[in-house]
Amino acid sequence: MPTASDKPDSTVGQHPTDTGSATPVAAVRRGGVRDVFGVPNYRRFVSGQSLSLIGSWAETIALALLVLQLTRSPLVLGLVMSTRYLPVLLATPYAGLIVDRSDKRRVLTLTNAVLGLTSLGLGLSVLMGTIALWQIFLAAAVFGVMTALDNPARMALIPELVDTQLLRSAITINSMMANVGRALGPAVAAGLIRWHGLGWCYLFNALTFALVVAALAALDGRQLHRTAPTGRGKRQLREGLAVARSNRDIAGPLVMMAFVGTLAYEFETSLPVFAEQTLSAGVDGYAWLTTAFGVGSVLTGLLIARWPITGLEPMIRVTVLYGAAMLLLTVSFELPVALVSAGLVGGASIAFLTTGNSTIQLAAPPQMRGRVTGLWTTAFIGSTPLGAVIIGVVAHRFGGHAGLAAGVIGCALAVILGTVVHRRSEPERTDESGSR
Image 1 (tube, rainbow, N blue to C red):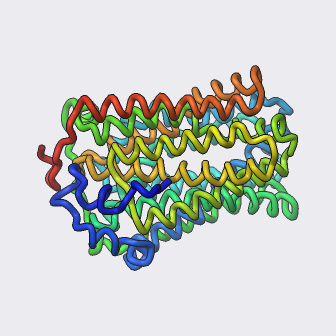
Image 2: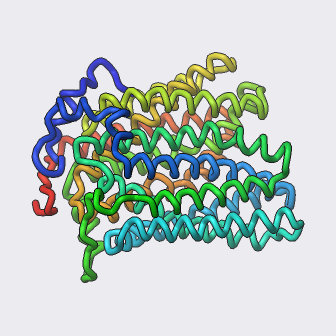
């Protein structure tokens, strides 16, 4: 979350690892929401993605309810979620290499088409009453594999949609829309389930995937800042790891995300238990906390889109604020106080995500953005199978607030290790050709 010390001209425009020459501060300040949405390709892309994120959250809610209806087993639900995210942990680094070797728009068209057909098939099975547990596990596996490809391709496409001076704001808006999806998706799911049934959540999500495919097809290829696909070669995965390891503005955010992603981003596990056990607010309390989180994210996202922050040192400061907000939520024992705290956590959350994401994308050579963003996806989403288990065990053993306290510890460890990386190494300059 921005503070008085996070001034635009101290964190952007003079970034040492920005691709090409330093971006003038005035140019960055012009890169606000209006300027970014003034780019037709970006406007089409983010509109489709925003609807898809709402649909994906609606399906996630429906999936949990469907599994519990079929099995009445939280354990089976946990296994389904692990099946969903384990491929992201195992396959994303190589998926990032595939993205670097491919046309990113074609990769995204493939992933969204497959995900849409999968949701359509599940929705029809639910409506016809023929759904079986093996179908859910199969769909979860398909979701995981496609997500492993989709996330790095989506992040690597953004620099091809906008100019460099708009990139920070574009990344921020993209992350902000993800939190809009988090806030609206459960409400859409509740309405569809109440009036039409679980199956319609899947059909709605299938429709949103079709809209993404249409948006990708509508992109004007002449306005894309294309990066030439990387040819096949030996040790290309190692090259990506070497670049990430040698540049502190890539290595630092990745290390920090590994700890924050594992311990501080497991809100699907920690918040329901916190609402139930600590606040005694039940399902309604969880819904309010999720909404407050989303509101805080969107409001902070609008500020960051106007005054972006980039670099490892600002990211360390943002993580301190994130940990402080998590601590405040941990010690909130009344719902009104917890809602304010959840809003602060949401704001700090999007500040952390966008600062880290823009830092690594601006530091990475263009032809390696797929591999680098693949590592980021592994640290963020791929940590879910491990993090969910850790937070679940901690919350079960010590209470609802303890799961959030583990997130505070994750932020503290991230600050310590990020500071170590910052002090031990110097950033490298990377030009647009990828040479160093």
